[in-house]
Length: 70
View 1 (cartoon, rainbow, N blue to C red):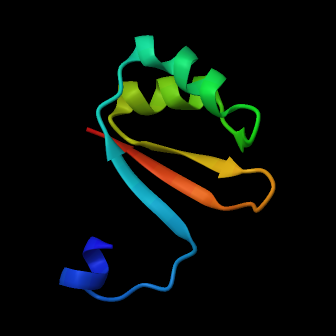
View 2: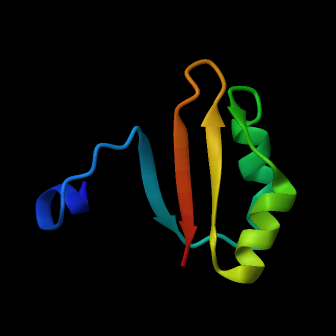
View 3: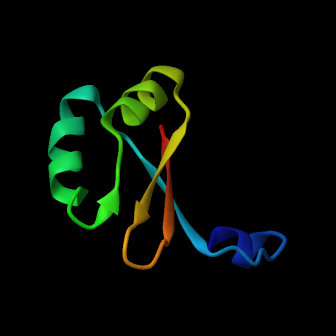
């Protein structure tokens, strides 16, 4: 949404989220999403260590959510 208001419009089919997440949050996040989303705890752990991003994918629609670590 920010790029649409302040930058160059993009035609992407995903959502970008910025969050502060810690390793002790991983299991709870996986349990909350694993029934409807592809989510990988090791990918999240690596993203936290690298201060990078990871994604989750809604299984029914294949909609991707990119999650960026603060």
